[in-house]
Image (tube, rainbow, N blue to C red; front, side, top):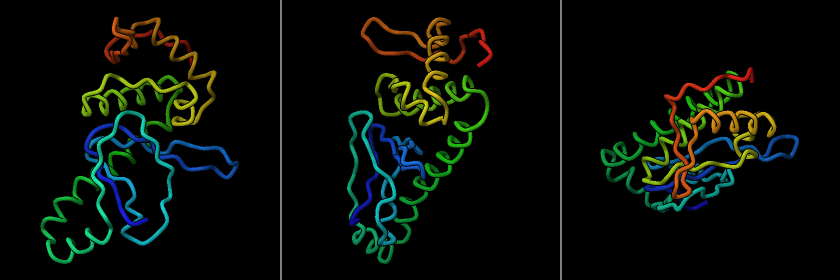
Length: 177
């Protein structure tokens, strides 16, 4: 790796392969986040990155960043601070998405996606049930049941233009999932 990428607009997913050989989405990165910090350490990229929306990113050659660190430490501190904040936020989201009932985890995921999409000025991105299950660590069937419930109860609403709207304030009736 010779560069890292600062996301200015859009959403990317970072995937790792489990010991069982299954891909697992481990992080969603939106505006202000960075991908490929391993380049600074001269290490191979750890994740597979896939764009979930149109993405605008700034490619920062590792050599250029090293020179900036040496020559402009104040500027670099200003660049690295939001990257650290995004990494800390990703850790919090990972914790939220891996604990609680399936319904709670799906709701946390939808809230995260709604936030990332609105920051990128995109309509709500509704991932496949497979991607949702991969992100929150559950079965596709469980996600499918919860998504159907959320749609029935108006938490997820299909707009006339085909976009989705997430209404976290709607009070769905839990179905025990």
